Image 1 (spheres, one colour):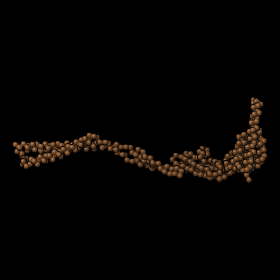
Image 2 (tube, one colour):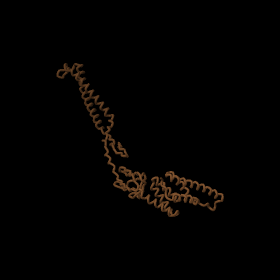
Image 3 (cartoon, one colour):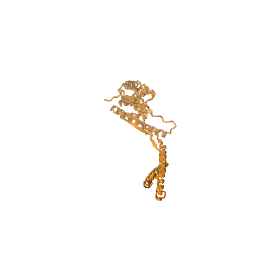
Image 4 (cartoon, rainbow, N blue to C red):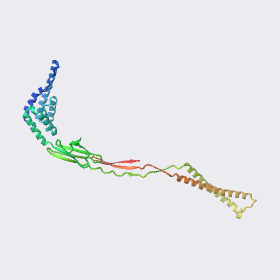
Length: 337
């Protein structure tokens, strides 16, 4: 059987009789026609409020607390009397909203004297019983949480709510805390009626990131000058020319050796003189070409070696940072040039 407060019928009659008195008197400046229209409108509003209150009482007696709460709140929009506050708090209590119900009972108790001692006694009894049922939670700052942001059921708590007993409705509640450089703290606390539970918020420092791996500088060779290639080409050609002249000199010597024993040729033989002149030309030509080739190749090599400076790029850094989340783990890799 659903709970029905004592003297419910008496209070209902009191509310129904008291509602007409809540209509404000029409000002003396209003015309009689406007006063009559306002009075008619107020009577309609009052009639609707009476109907809502009667329906709310029926829903309350049937145990339909959610619909009864909605109906009582509609009545309260016309006038919030101590009786209406009491019934709203009663519906809140039956729906498990103990903290809100206690606030409603205390508001009704503040105006209870206007309805007599019986009503005050009933409300006082409700307040005392409900206070014993409301659970509390106490959140303390532990290691690492000195400057953390602490949330209770998604609501950020101020300093006045830390270290004190906070009244809550029975059931599960989530405590979460965050601070830079620390892992996120999160826990679920299930409160029973009348219980008091303490939660110590302790944050664990995040692991130190591994040292960045530094890649060695990249040496980029510069382009050699064109002159080195030109001089080197001249040197190679001179060496080839020197070799050709040397072969021609050897051929000329082969022709002269049979006719010029001991290196002396007959002075009146013109062909031998021409062959001897060619041999001498090829001999000196090969020597000159050889010297030019060696000098040119050497100069080219010197130019190439002198130009072997490198252009260093900035060192590259590879950073690996762990990424932690709720139910997830990973790493962020960053390559910096």
